[in-house]
Amino acid sequence: MPELPEVETIRRDLAAHLGATRPRIARVRTSAAPLRQPPHAALAPAAAEGARIDAVDRHGKLLLVRLSHPDGPRTLCIHLGMSGRLLVDAPDHPRPAHTHVEFVLSAGTCLRYVDARRFGSVTVVAGLPGGDDLGLGPDALATPWSRAALRAAIGGSRRTIFDVLLDQRRIAGLGNIYVQEILHRAGVDPRAVAGRLRARGLDVIAARIHPVLRAAIARRGTTLRDYRDASGRRGGNAPHLSVYGGAGAPCRCGAILRGTKLSGRSVTFCPRCQRLGRPRRIAAR
Ligand SMILES: [Zn+2]
Image 1 (cartoon, helix red, strand yellow):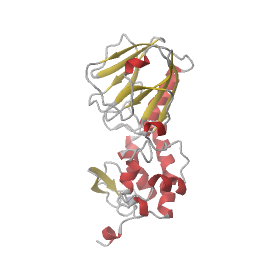
Image 2: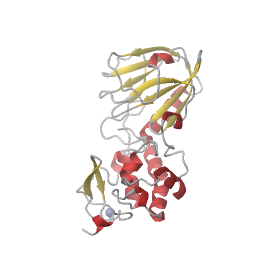
Image 3: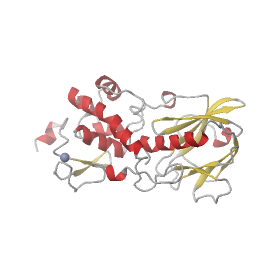
Image 4: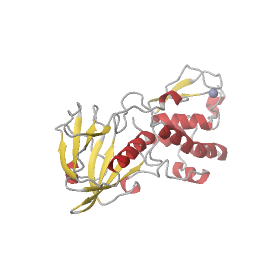
């Protein structure tokens, strides 16, 4: 699933492509197959027709395309779900299979939303909502993380730190890949109870969030299978992952990475490097 670094790569691609031209959305075409409906009240993609594109923002994993519409400002909200792609293309190029929404732009190009599994969403909302208006927590990249900021986001949760960092209402933008990478770099056990983490654990997590995300953005994101940038190219970060998907392989410390299941997801961690916050009942075994 695309996470913050992948969505930010697409955002930068779109912003560079649109530049200062502020193209108009001349026509919107949608397929008959329905996409997922997001929790916030929203209009169909056709409500973007006739609008000018002013800017491309992002909050967490959500792309927010700001529009000037004759009826007032609107925002095109795009969530890539599990397998969504947003491609800049020529309108006369054949549409890829699973193209669900197409925005034909006055600049002579088009934006195509392609999604084989249809877990993504493409909707329009009135006004210029921020992440909190859409039920999202603080953005993982825009927020200056500190012990206090992280503690405020986590609260006293009794869930695992792995689970809490994935919760978009607490921190927006992190998913399965980058939570595992951040916890590994921080030396924190993914099974740690979030609300019981001490100062040291919070400090190292707060210090690792930005470096892990920035390094992945610099490599244009992680492609495991589906993710592509706005030009259809793969990201280059996958070979640089330290733990994700690596159970049974050696950690850089030499210990063998271990796999476990948390909240139904496969999680990999290093039993030697990631000791901070390890629950006592596990440590005693
Ligand atoms: Zn290790």
